[in-house]
Length: 370
Image (tube, rainbow, N blue to C red; front, side):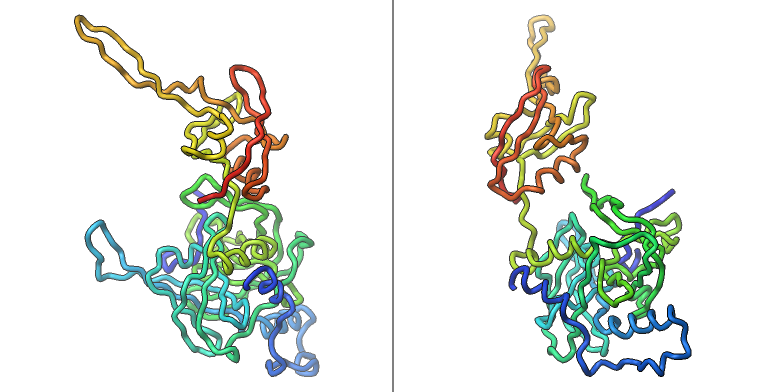
């Protein structure tokens, strides 16, 4: 049985400009580099790997978390500890990692390459993309930001490198190739999927989550997030979030603490042969204001002797079926949200619905996700 293992658990500015600068920031001039003469005895492939590691490893951090289990009334003394990886984004102390690495943590600490350790605060988090940004108060001399590359021109077969802290072994590098592109990954606990995911064969294990995926130029092209495994450890199938998604999300997390998304005002749907049925509308939401209909509750009466009994029944036939958004067919809730999120709040989307056997185009002014 295949499991998606999100490996950050132990058991398991400011605007876009700030992040854009990461692409031009590399290790300082004082970085220790091997000369070409020092590397002459190695093969070309080995020299590339050595240079990549020496350029990037000091930008990779260890993230340790501590959570106190709770019930409704008590906080237990037995803490749950976790570990993951991250990357230094800038000289202000912003750290990139996965949402699942720090989710639910009461305490977070970031350890830099020189062994210095700092408490970290969560600046922002985006669960649908499994991205989080932390901040530490560290001296600039200890912070070496990563160099951000591009993921739009990645090719299957291209050599890549992953650096992280598997099993707590700091700044470990593994090597492999890009096995596939444009994969999707389920988002735990939701009906959502992450899009445009990079599949790799470089070894990833528990603690690698949040670490950088690097190309042969030493530039970050993604963030390692999960492995597919039937045994709970690396099986040669790993996954990374592309840098294009990170570039889009991180500036919003730094500026607002969250990603601002358009909202259609539909809370729940179900898949029907004749379209995506609307189960529940958000009261006062965009869809309700535009006149879309969800499942109604009707009261049916039956007489038994001198008594009349009333029974509430869900009337699914009365609900609208969604066929398309802006002419793009949608077959499930994830596709619906993806189509809506291509818009900004306040923009108009045309929703094609099926009502009483007839197709209708309904323009809807989108709200903002709460």
